[in-house]
Length: 91
Image (cartoon, rainbow, N blue to C red; front, side, top):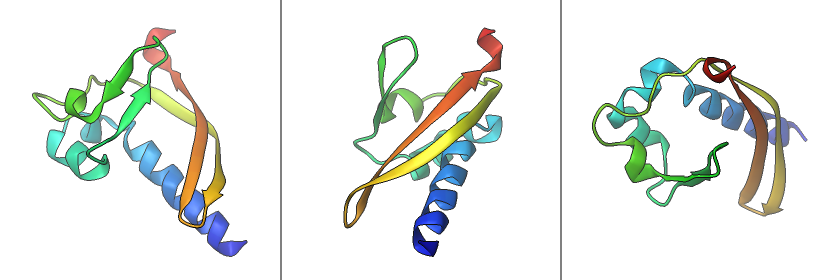
């Protein structure tokens, strides 16, 4: 159980790092953090890929908070992480 909680903490910290302005505006840092085949579904319904974030100036700066972070084991070496992100700049 300790490994589960340590992994959960580590993954949550990485996700929170992706919300920080200094990370979002640093294409080199985004390139290190995101897998080459990374994609996500945005709140707009758009699908975003790594190539959308590592070029130019990176991602737009937003004031965002992450909550309700959970991980669910899918296999011996794979977990699904779920969470809510609140974008304060859209409120």
